[in-house]
Amino acid sequence: MRNFKKILNNEWSELSHGIKKAKHSYHTFTFCTIFEKIPEARTVVLRNTNKSKHLISFHSDFRSKKYQQLKDNNNVCALFYDKNRKVQLRVNGLGSIEHKSKSCIKSWNKMSKESKICYLAPLAPSSTTSKFIPNLPTISPHQITDKDEAFGYQNFCVVNIKISKIDWLQLDHKGHKRILFEFNNDFSANWIAS
Ligand SMILES: Cc1cc2nc3c(=O)[nH]c(=O)nc-3n(C[C@H](O)[C@H](O)[C@H](O)COP(=O)(O)O)c2cc1C
Image 1 (tube, protein in one colour):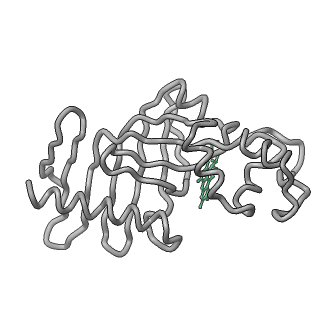
Image 2 (tube, protein in one colour):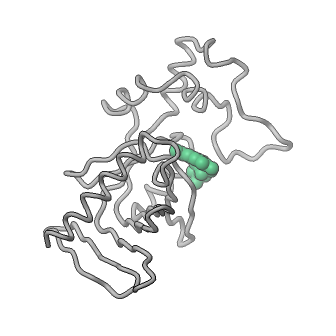
């Protein structure tokens, strides 16, 4: 069990490096939802982790399809692959959206004006348009007013994933290593065949 915990702790530590370092393989991951029985996958940027609560988070536009999809079905999957260490993390859990919460205010206040611009898009993500529209505000980051801030904050949300299990796979020419970590009531870890 000690070895399993060491491996898991190391992954939490790599995930937190992924938040800070844009070049780290864990900086982005594939986030998957199910909507009306159809899977949907998209790339997102890892923004926060909470090891003791088994949580990972990313930022999103509250107007995007994710909100409706998570309301419909909150079973989600997150997929990470670290090319250097040849480690894949297949994470399952429950997704939830925080909008205008204390943690949203904290994240919004820490965000650069360049990043805030993304939330000032006039159209909701996935809106149909008759021709190509950049969907960017006409102002540059340094021109953001208090009114723009309020509009951007209204569109900003934090998506949390409460992890229930992690399927850890490390490619190895002597035999791929695979462990299933589960966090439901009690913690468990077991080798599984690759
Ligand atoms: C490298 C990269 C990073 C992205 N990061 C995010 C992100 O952190 N949050 C987000 O909502 N969308 C992000 N996107 C856009 C999503 O992949 C997706 O296109 C968008 O969120 C709309 O998804 P939806 O219609 O399923 O809601 C990113 C895309 C790329 C290519």
